Length: 342
Image (cartoon, rainbow, N blue to C red; front, side, top):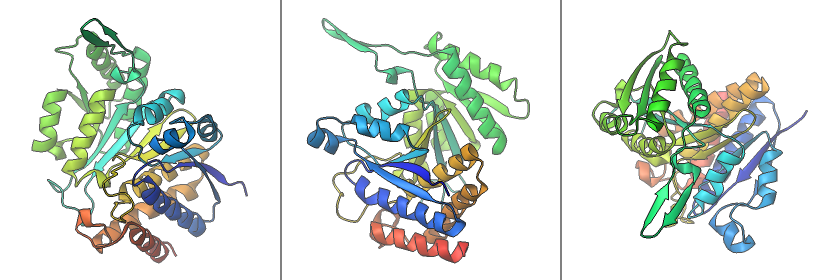
């Protein structure tokens, strides 16, 4: 049996604590459903820069390229040189960031279930910056191609959910760049008649996420706006410790928690692994679709179901009001998976 090859980048800070939990959970799912997974570890981030002289070594790039998918922990100050570069290098154009209320978590409002679909390769994060005497300039790049494909992704996701998209931009101030994005998104909407949509300026959307988050289903956003709004949405549902994400391209996908490396709690066993575990569940779901293997879809559902059950039982780190260490949460999740999955 051919094993699914997963590139593993633990990253910095709490990464080496939360990523192994997710890997163990995936391995447990593989044992339960009878598929094989091969994990290959690679270096990236601040520690890699300090020890190897590169934040993203060539070996890591090639390791990701030769894998079926990748899972990555948080990195520190070298995020631009690691994740932004990987997104652009592998054209991981769709950034999916769910914000969902889980049991045992204290949200700002119950019943929230949002999916932010963020364009992931251009906008200001393209990195075209330069300095002039007494000033600095950043170029905002928005193309019809990138806008169209991310809009198509968002509307397809909405068809699987509650069939509503909120198109977020700021075309009243930036009619060329944001205007292009909004215009293309509406063109795409016309080819998905079963999905309703509305447009919302990004400042109004940020307020509505607090005032009425349950009014959102899928948010379609540009790169910078999506980065900011997804952190806000995560806090609405209980914090970044519950915020998974996926970076998806045509042939490759990389999965990671939204949160940072949290160096202040690194090594103390306090890190919440649920965001990374839920990212791993997203990875299994994507692999199921990419490889046509229904066992992986079942594994994805089992991981999320186990997370729900474990949280309901109070198996959580102190940030969620629990008393468990990071590794203890992992062991608890595996036990629940065996209980639920046989």
